[in-house]
Image (tube, rainbow, N blue to C red):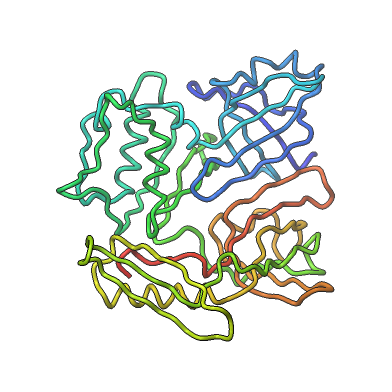
Length: 364
């Protein structure tokens, strides 16, 4: 029995449209604060008989390995090209890019003043899915955060006459430093149904993992470069907090380390305390003085980190040994991409150095 299975489902009725599609050249993955993507191809002889099971705007597609759902999303494009029938899909949050607020204030739920962005995200989905033929069945986590959107002077509005795009609103709500984070997931339930979920995390998604690792000579397929560039380096950080003009809170943290003075400006308009601003500026300066980063790795399925043992947002120890360097550090997984078919299966992970992220609330 094949390890991998790809099947489609009707978005509105839940009917299984095809139980096992013979897809080739499959690649798919999830990403932090984004929809992720799925790509695959069908041979023409299969495509002609299964067009209805791959209809954009109707069909959902899933990737399953060993009976566990690894990915799910909406089919967006099946345009034949050069004798091939490609299938392109994206995760649940991509649906909001095709929806707009046509009533204003998300159907009367807004405007928002000092409101948790998690609440507004749930309202976005509730509004989108209450419309006829708009219920994708996405469940949003009940997570709450300490972040806030909107003030009495500038409430968070959604005006119908501006036809705001719900996908853009979601992006705005998770884009600020200290905002909640999300990832699209799916899972089989005990009653045989499939749950489609937007998983929210605050102050972060994922966790620091000591049970898995990625290491040269063990499960790293290639020898990834360790980036050593001055682009993000700084030994002086200039921070600005709340306030305007001469009343703006201001802090500078600088050290002499034998290099030229290299500065970075950190804007934190929600930070009201001078002490808090100073701590954040100092932490940013220490982070920016650290050189070396691995941005992408390809790994094989291995007991050191079995397929799917990580989650988007996890911090994992990465160790690289090659003719140029020996480097080890904690890296955060911000996206993954699976390529079934290789033996053993492989995945490409997009990484950021773990200390590049601020995991506390906006006031910390």
